[in-house]
Image 1: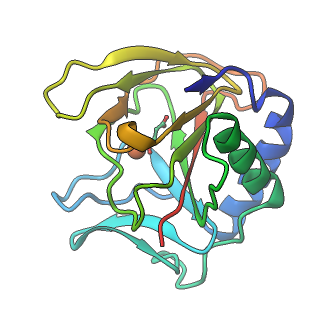
Image 2: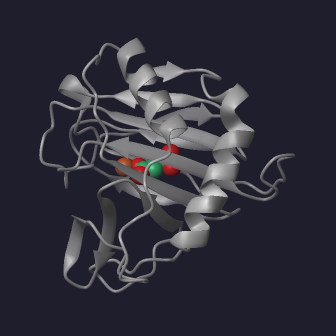
Length: 194
Ligand code: SIN
Ligand code: FE2
């Protein structure tokens, strides 16, 4: 479900919170198990953060870059995620992880499933801020041809239930500048990881 503009009025506060998170846990191009740097720079907040390195994909309670716990999830983030999930039919969402993705023009995310979490009955909530992107919404199999869904500043996507493991990704970001973020798209992805 796409909740158009659901985060629009909160966006400047969200960006200020992202800056605070990045001051404690800097954005970083993590390395995939295959040895390539991720195209999007990432950081996390909340009890758990999504990480990748030569040993694989997983969640961790500390930032491997700093050795410290991830910054706490701002109340604003958690409230937005819970409200959006409830609106989409998931009243019991309790996120413990928020991955913050930072894309610049040309950055992308190839088709993947979110499957490093413990409980697939909990949905995923994804918040888009800044430059627009084309979200690729695939199927249950990697080979299913994805639909192209434009995601604009302030849009929130929720997926779960039978769609929890749908393949999804982000088409290479186009050039542009956004009044709030400059030449950047942020994406907040909320999950129940542990
Ligand atoms: C993700 O799948 O983790 C990111 C999706 C997005 O950036 O919209
Ligand atoms: Fe994902």
